[in-house]
Length: 67
Image: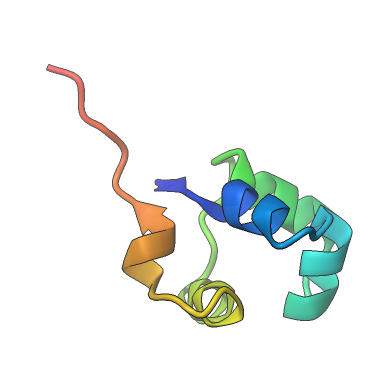
């Protein structure tokens, strides 16, 4: 699953550690989500979207499929 978390976090001037603290997760969790190594739980996905004042659909996207 692709996401726009890194772009939104950087636009907000937040470090991975600061975002993790705001969401009550580790910096490593934020890094893993941003790099696509980890898909967040549904409650965490909602918390991320809420933090950026948007919807889950605006933050997370299906990966592009290649024929």
